[in-house]
Length: 180
View (cartoon, rainbow, N blue to C red):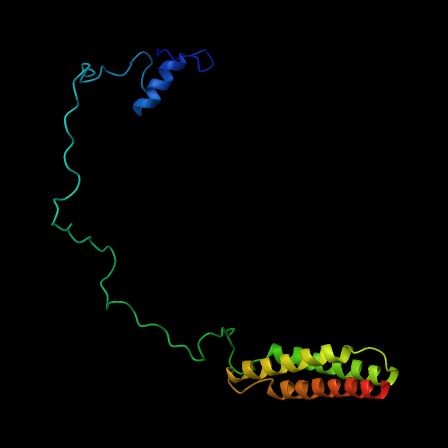
């Protein structure tokens, strides 16, 4: 019959630390580390000089080994079908590309004409100038964005937005003339 220690009994903490420090957590209790091989140096003596870890002056270290494949064995880079710098979503065959800038510009242009007409009718405010400016700016941005897409989608909406933004400006400027 083998005798096993009670795991809940108090244990010698120092012995556990020594076992863990030696790297053997399962060593039997009571086995302490062996005595050091070399006693401490006597006062007034110096330890031996370390070996030189560096190369002699004028010599170069050896070239490091490359763990990767040598240059020239890489596969060729994939070809980009469109202009660089613009990320395009993956397309399904037959799907049309859309220009989100064009729809935003058209919305701003319609809103500009509405606010410009209200300003012209009531002779109060100038909100058509702000929205007209947005419509013109967004329309120009949409045209530049459409140039990078195949088929120039949204180009007509962008031109319409620029015209409507300019019309909103004209309505507000007419209201300023009528106020004077």
